[in-house]
Image 1: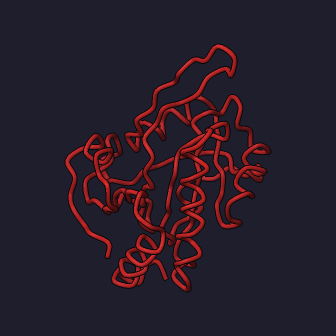
Image 2 (image 1 turned 180 degrees about the horizontal axis):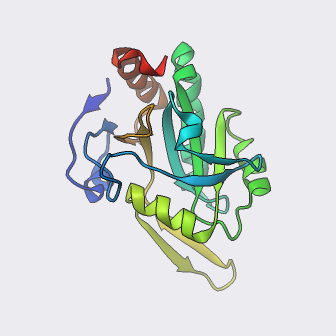
Length: 196
């Protein structure tokens, strides 16, 4: 069963061991609680939150060179999407890279295709990526490596935006995908019909 709880900060999210949809605002967003972005989709289109108006957005952050966390999170997200059934029509899943230097639209297209056809990969300029990472309060540290270039240590949450692009919270993804899907189905069915 999905539990709901208000969490005071992003750091508290890192300590969570079950899934939560929290009602706290993201670290830095506009006064109207709409998270705005303009990025490049993996098919080359320029997209913003307006392109997904009327649908909930499940957003994950990561990078294609990630050795373990990102593939695991995307695989779990794919299971969640499959578990949503008819409610999947209300949801758009997005994977935002924070490594635009290596993750072009073409690279992202190949990468997200490994997980689920409904996931859209998003990239952009360094500034565009910095803006959205900051807006969601993603915790991120670049670590230089001697032979492998660089990697990132980063938080791993799935963020939920409402049909208007309004921040709805964060889903801790360490729980079984069937529990996450069941909780989301219950949540989506209880929401007003604006997403239908």
